[in-house]
Amino acid sequence: MEYRSSDTDTGNSLKEVLPDLKKGKLFPCYLLYGEEEFLIKDALDKMIALILPERDKDLNLFLLDGEHVDIEGLCRSLLMPPLLAGKKVIVIRNTRIFLSAGISPELIRNIRDQMDSDLDRAAKDFMHFLRMMGWSLDDLKDGGWKKISDNEWQKAVAGDGGRDRETWLPGMIDICVNRGLKETPAAMAEAELLMDILKGGLPEGNHLILTANTVDRRKKIFKVISETGKVLHFPQIKVENRKRQILMDAVKDLLTEAGKTITPGAWAAIGKKTGFDVGNSMEAIEKLITYTGEKLTIEEDDVGEVIGKTKEDTIFDLTAALTEKNLHRALSSLKDLFDQGIHGQD
Image 1 (cartoon, rainbow, N blue to C red):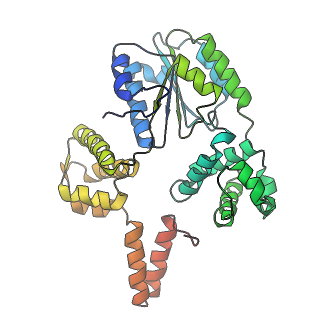
Image 2 (image 1 turned 60 degrees about the vertical axis):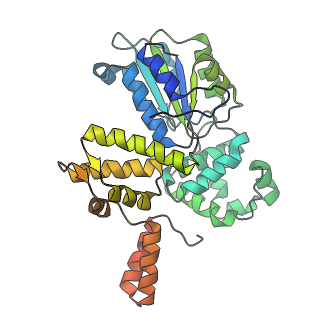
Image 3 (image 1 turned 90 degrees about the vertical axis):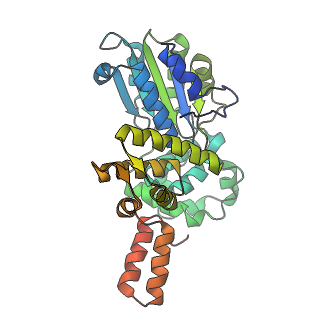
């Protein structure tokens, strides 16, 4: 698959980076960021496969969660030679060191969208938002958020008057409190430490790969990585034909690897279930490959068995149940809607 970057600062694309990796031309640091998580994951897998032989991955590949990474420990590891002779790759997934108050409007939009699809990420991003604003979860819980005036919110989240905060903010706060999330230390000193390491240069053979959903390109750490490494941007695919083409290429690769084919009817059924969203569609294909076992062709009936109902299907069921005055079916459909992320305010 070819993914073109729209990042005018770097002009890098995976199509340009992969041939260099095949030739052994590597940079000390890479940043992969954007809204298309599946494309980032796929690009990361391809890059790692070209940098490290399979036999070296157990000892020379380190996968870290950006939410909990110890930057001081990371910097020490970056300066240490690999355990095995050859290359060493450290990956920090979903790093937050590129976030800043300057992108708070985008971050808030992402949080609100993710409340319906990815509560874990929404909660983590919300905690980082609080940290950037200097607000405390303890101060906001139990109705404390009401003390934030519209004017204060406007200053924190430019362009958002905040008059509809009551529709989502209390729920987000409760989710974070119930999960026992705690404020994390400021990232400024961590970013400065990592910048010093990158400016000084990594030992030969050591490489750092970072992935992120949202970045502030004005931050110094972004500029340092752009100068010393490569930045690849994977923006949200908005053109429907482009989205479907990327998805079809990805599905073709996955099915070929599994030795399977898919019927047109099954493909259309997946589109109905997922809206041809790249990440959700690929997850559906992976489930179908596992479900069909030794069967070589994925058919429409398989999709119906494996992939859950869409929200539209469930709303139809609920409407029908209410018309028929079938209380048991109505309650069951209502529960399905809640499980799919539909809430009272929607």
